[in-house]
Image 1 (spheres, rainbow, N blue to C red):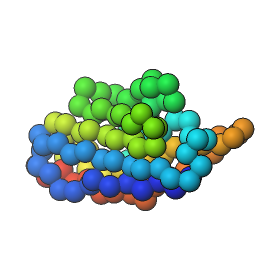
Image 2 (cartoon, helix red, strand yellow):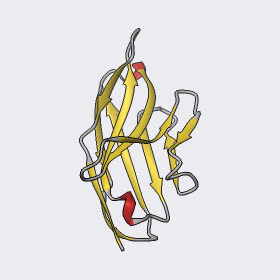
Image 3 (spheres, helix red, strand yellow):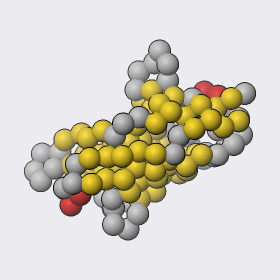
Length: 117
């Protein structure tokens, strides 16, 4: 599975951005899709994930502001980010768990989101 992320950029605090991640390859084996982020000097953290049946989970820090969604073909995952804060500044990575038996992690390239105060 290959993941291609897009949509990062510079935005002022309070603004919005939408990230997208397109999957290709063995897409029928994809289970959960997710977004992670890594801020400078910090460890990578989970932001949100969506299961194959549409169950979603969010980090407490983004609840009510971010929305994760997946298209009907389950090949694209998006992250709508509203009311952005400077502390949301990070490199965002899309992720999926995929496999025909055991599930493995696949990662897209990061996309930088910078929120100015």
